[in-house]
Structures are given as C-alpha cells and as structure tokens.
Length: 475
Image (cartoon, rainbow, N blue to C red):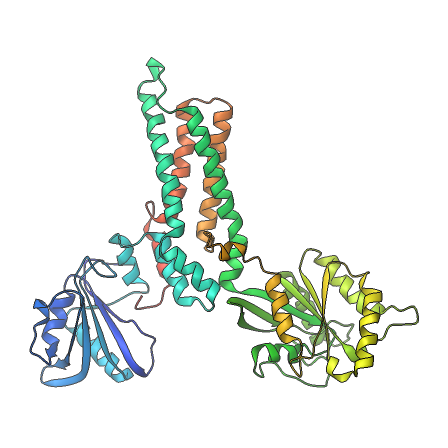
C-alpha cells in the first residue's frame, strides 16, 4: 500500500440518502479538489483556512454535477494528519459515483479498507489500540459497547499500558547500564523499588486480563439460551422480547427445528436471545438434530432460561413433577455454573386460585433444583416480561462498567497481556532467585515487546493488514 498518495472514498454508508460524504486525504487533496469546485462566493480553496466550510458546485468541465458543501482540514490538524477534504453532496448513488470517479481521474486513488485510520495511526494521531477502538465504536449497538469503545478511543487503556511500559523501560535502562559496569560491581537499579514495580505491574495486568471475561460479552452481546419442552411458548417469549414476529408460533409441537437468534438492548446491555428446539424424547431425526443443537447452544450461552407451561405443571401424588425435575437436572448436571432462570409461562390461562396452587406446588419441589431463580410470566400478554429483563440484568457483572474502569474487549490485546504477564512473572522469579541483571534483562525486553504490541510501538505490515482489513471502506 502506497501511503504518500491521495486517496478517496465514500465515508457514509452506500446507498441513497439525504446526503453523502466523500472523503479525500493526502498531500494533493486540496490541489485535486480545488479546480473542481466553484464557490458561490468565488473563493479559491487553496487560499482558505483550515476547518472552514464552503458552499459551491462540483463541476466536470462545464457540467455541474452537484451543489455541495466542502470542509477543509489542513494537515496535521485533521483526522489522518494529512490535508483532508470532505465533500457533502446529495445522497444519490449516481451523484456519489460521478464525484468519486471524477476525483480518481484527476489523481486520487480509491482508498483501501481502514486506510484513513491507518494513516492516522502512522501519522501519530492515535495509537494502535485507539485505532482498533474506532472500528468497535462504529459497530457498537448498545450503551455498554459504546461506552467501552469511547473509553478506549480516548486512550484510557493505552494510557495505562504506556505508563507501565515507561516505568519498566526506565528500570530496564538502569539494568542495562549495570551491564556496562559489570567488572566494577555497581548497582544502578534499586532492587527493592524494582520489586515494588514488578508487583504493581502484575496486579494491573491480572486485573486487565480478568476484565476480558466481562468485556468480551459486553462487546458482543450476552448470549441467553431459551430452552424447554416443545410448545411451552419459547418462540412467543422471543417475539415478546423483540416486539416483533421473529419466530414461528404454532400449536404444533416441535415447530422450531433450528435455533433462532436476535439481539436487543436491556438497560444499555446487549443480550443475544437464542430460541432453541424443544427438549424431549423424539423419533423425528430432524427434530433430534435440533435438540442436540440446543445443548450446544446452552454450552455457548452465559445465561439459560428454562420455560415450562403453567397448564402442564401438574405434580404427581407425592407432590413432585418428575418430568420437570429431570429436564432441569439435565441442564444443571452438564452446566452447573451457568445462571438459570426458570420461567412458568402461560399463567394467563389460570385463574387466581390455580395460580396460588401453582406457587405452592412449585415451592414444594423447588428445593430439589439448586441455584435457580423462578418467575411467573405470560409471554402472550407480556405479563412479567419486564421483571424477567431486570432479572437478566442482575446476572451480568456490570460493576467494572459502572465504575468506568478499563475493560479489555479485544482478543489481540488479551493475548498480548497474557504474554506480558508471563514475562513479568519470569522477572519476578529472577528477583526471587537473585539472578544477574543480564538474564533478567532478556525477560524485561520481552515484556516491553508485548506492551509495545498493544499500542503499536512494535508492529509489522502483516499485523496492520489484519487489523485494518476489518474496517469499512471510508474509515
């Protein structure tokens, strides 16, 4: 990729709309656009100050393509650090392509995916972790993922890593200096202070690593599996949550043969609900495959909702409901640590006396079902749906988010932190064993390397290619 030329791309989503924004960046951005723009007040773009707006027409010779608003940003005071022009035109796809093709004919090149942000990184406008946060911000679909991406883009995570790296680098320099005076047996790096620093780095790294478990699900949505026997209202519940007819609802048992997924935001947190095939003994091969897939989905879920129909909840003479307990036991035996919410659905089909009896029956057998919460609900009428949403929020650890703590959501960062911690633990062991400075220096350099991988001080073309290939064109 050539990074000293001028690039152009549509910065807004493709398709027709009210307006579209075309971005041009590079050393010749202003020179290329200026002859194509006729200002309403006869201004020359080459002579205009940075961060100014200008109304006029984009022309191709004598032909007017569109009336536009042009924004000028002089490098380095721009997103990319280069001269940048943004052309706001009418949102016709024909107009968009006419302007882009004109700019290409006059000397621009079509931008690659993420190339504007790549140039911002290479020009020192942001570090690598901040650049990755740009993609996360664009794809954020709820308040939690937006908050995490904004914090990282503002440098919350990278500032923490930079500070640790600089302190470790200072001690590494002193230890390296000791090696130059090895014959004189002098000590420049205070070992007690170094021990305190290593301990603090270990604590910070462990905290950041632990935050990934929370950050990953907050970023991608918390998967919730809706399971139970056929025809107990799983699809109706999914439709009630999504407020649309997303899943097929039928009185015929086993109509859901495959899992159906969709995501909603509850309290600013994304939840991915998975409506699965019913759990029951069956001779139907297709339905059997669906049931097998149900348990696969449960293994991937963070929370499990088990539905039972109120009109089918009939305890036997001993006061037990063996079928209900057996199915719950299957889930509990395979997934003992997963939060489990048992929902008694279709309570709207019972009168008040029957509902009271149901509560008493459930109390009698619930002692045999450990670590499960219960809720009465009608997916058809919406009764109890809001209470269910609140219970789901209780299962999510949002303390880190509420306290505005740094949360790791990127698997590349997570792996680099694990590697850095492994090297810091080696340094700790070296201090315990009173190893010589030259041996500890090797592990310190490796830890510094992994810190640099996160922020981009240490990188390579393959890494940059993999990261920015996931960006959209125009960003």
